Image 1: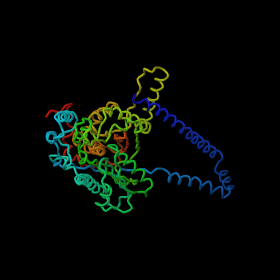
Image 2 (image 1 turned 120 degrees about the vertical axis):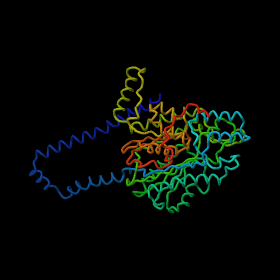
Image 3 (image 1 turned 45 degrees about the vertical axis):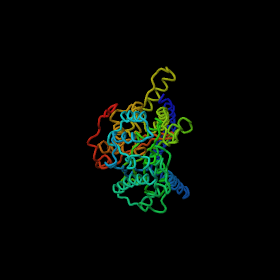
Image 4 (image 1 turned 60 degrees about the horizontal axis):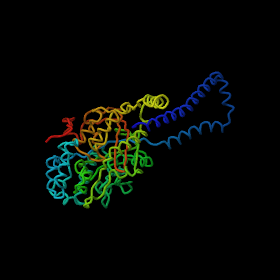
Length: 487
């Protein structure tokens, strides 16, 4: 069952809370007793007793609490804030309607009629719209001939530099004020690295801490956020971390006929985002509350369910296993198990515990209580990896159509943009004017390995306008997405 493991964790969390409450109750009781004793003694006798204390006693009584408070403040993890974020605005010239996509595919001698029919049926049921975009190299006839390293670099520069430019303009942060740079891009790892390209473009400092995360799939954006959070803990207070999330798809066009490896050709599209994090709350728009990472790679099936390999003809591509949805469901269970006790209100956890006890002690046929995560979050950003993923999470979490609207509309407008899709979804919610101060957002990402990562954010300051990737189209959304698109 989806929440069996969460039931055990919830009970453990309740037990932990009760154990931590006991010292608090004792402390309050002792403080009250001490206050009553002071009142009974009276001010004159109390003053005389203080005068009898030695200077060493007075010093220790004042110094030790102050020292303990200083040590606590120094060791306490710093809060991390999202200053702002920006998504790549896909140019109209990169738009790829279904008809153009299929026409180009038909001109490839490596693809047979059976493969074309499969791709056609997949696109009709994918949830993608007619305005998704592919990189410039994929618009040429004989696509594979133009998917060079230079074309891949050009795609990264177009996406990453555009998003960073928008972010710097939004925040007013100078490039030399950036202390940490993290880029995640799974399948394109050139030399010099992608972080080196950004350092060279913006002339960043020579002492900047820079990392490139590769091969970690569509959930790598939240992994990058987690890494930035950890590095900010040891950086000077107020330091800035720039996170760039994208997937360069130019060199990853599959030319074979294996159906499981044709899926990425149909679903993945150009996109990217840049986010600026800091330990300073000045000008911040969100606060990072929790970040939970779940990796199920120890299991062979999970490890191989999203796998880059060559087919029988030697064509390289990404093989998506038919067990992908089941594996994603198991990873989600594990992630919810860790996230639930941190965010669910006590009332939900008590209902959960009561259901667990009733099933164990009274009747196993009692239906388990599924926690209502809508009591913990106002907004949900589910990785727009495909219609099936969004459908499954909506069903398992009991979400309304409006609560998954951002994910569906992002998939329709931009396609699967890998790790950056979560930022497009957050942008959709803000562009619609639905974000309010104090609102909580749950981001859920899935990726190869297999990974499920979740991040909980709290809004400090909503966006003032709809400027961004949705600026020119938000007035047309939401749109109706049929089960099967006719064209």
